[in-house]
Image (cartoon, rainbow, N blue to C red; front, side, top):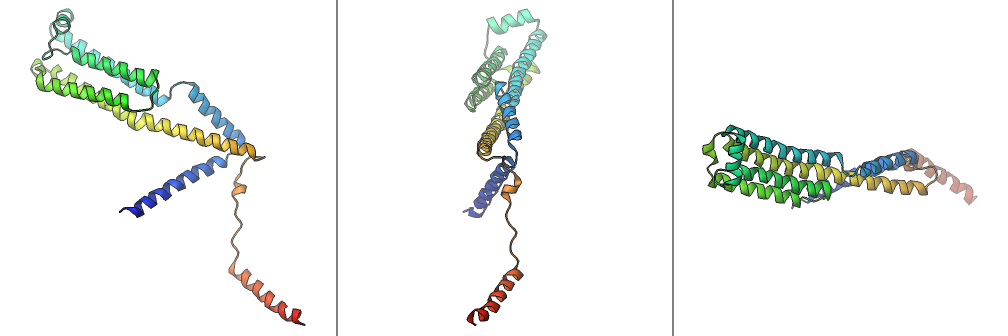
Length: 234
């Protein structure tokens, strides 16, 4: 049982939420409207900056694998002859064409899911990474790529690494940051609605609490009451 730790985490989370709310409430309506306009301006862009960076990295994945494949074609006897051998006379055990098609598959699925449809879920990246990992592992085990020089190592390893970097970037950067931005927007909207109901906005003075009374003042009040009792009896 980790009750103390859970209680501590809950208290910490509640303190952070109260602190953020207090910070928002202490802002005047003009500043609140400025923040709302800034958030709405980001929404009008259609895509966040971090998501745009992710889409650029997906494009880089396709271009980089394509570049390596073209270099491999040129090294192994010229582009035309090798292209005919790897595409027209495709052989799973010796061709790199399927690795290029795998990069095209990742690019199309991820751009369609996260740039066009703007999904906020990880299922699309999970699909592309699972297919890429399974295909590359099977190809490395069954094919004869390692006997064809350095590109037999470079292309599968690069494709595998890029696919997992895309997964990490989406799961740990894109989705959490967009969720945080959405929560901030909701908090600012809620604070603006509350501020509109209170004339003059909210200020730190509304959170003022009177100072605690001193122990000496209570004793003096009791002495005064004791001294007044004989006078009342007379």
